[in-house]
Amino acid sequence: MKNILERIAAALERMQPSLPAKPDFALAAAYIWQIEPDRFEVVRSVNRIDIDLLVGIDQAREALWENTKRFAEGYAANNALLWGARGMGKSSLVKAVHAEILSQYPELKLVELQREDLASVGRLLQQLRAEPYQFILMCDDLSFASSDEHYQNLKVVLDGGIAGRPRNVVFYATSNRRHLMPRDMIENERSSSINPSEAVEEKVSLSDRFGLWLGFYPCSQDEFMSMITGYCEGYRVDYDAEILKAEALAWQAARGARSGRVAWQFFVDYAGRHSVRI
Image (tube, rainbow, N blue to C red):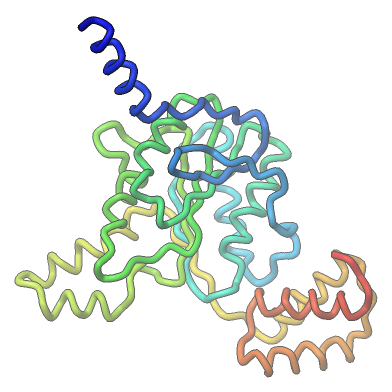
C-alpha cells in the first residue's frame, strides 16, 4: 500500500505545472513576455530608429523623454497613453526613448506585452516586483472590442489592485483610439444600457487611468519631406532634393496617405533602388 501511495504522489507531482525559471534580466535590455509557459524571451536587437530621426512629434517626444528619465532615476512617473494617427511613430518613440535613456541608465529594461496576453499581467507583475531593475511595460496597438473583457485586466497594470502597481514598473500603451474603444461601441452603451452614463463611464474611464496622454496627428507635406531627408542624411544616402521630392510625393499619392510610416516605406524603397543597405 505504501508503494502505491508513493507512486500516486509522484505521478501527481509530475502533473503539476513547473514553476517558471527565474529570469536573468542582466542578459539584455529588452524582452517579450510569453505565456504557456510564462517566460521572458530575450530580444538581442530591438527594431528601432534613432530618436533624432523622429520628426513632427517634438512635444510628445519631450514629454515622454522627461517622464521616462524620471522613472529611470527612481522618481515618480506616470503611465503613458500614446494615441492618434496611424503610422506617426507612437511605438517607435517608446523604443527610441528607451534606447536614448538606456545609455545613461543601463538598469532600465523594456518588456513588450501582447494585448492578447493581458489576462496574465498579474503573474507578469509578480515576477517584476522584486527585481532590482526598472521596467517599461509596453503594449502596442492597444484597443478593445465590445465583447472584450481584457480591459479589466489592464486595470491591474494601471491601478495595481490591493498591492498597488510595482514601483519599478511603468506602463506605456499605443493606440489609434483616445479612449481605447471604438466610438460605435461607446454609442451602443449609451443607447442600450439601463444606466447609460454609468455604462459609458466604465468603458472610457480606462484611458483616464493613464496620467500622461500624448496625441499624434497627421503630418504636413513639409514634415513628410523632412522625415525622408532626415532618413537619407542619417543613413548617408545621396539624393537630389527635387527628384527626391517628386518621387516621394508620387509615392504618397499612390498610397493615399501621408505619415511617418509611409515616409519610411518610401525611404526603404529609395535606398534599395540606389543599392544602399540600411
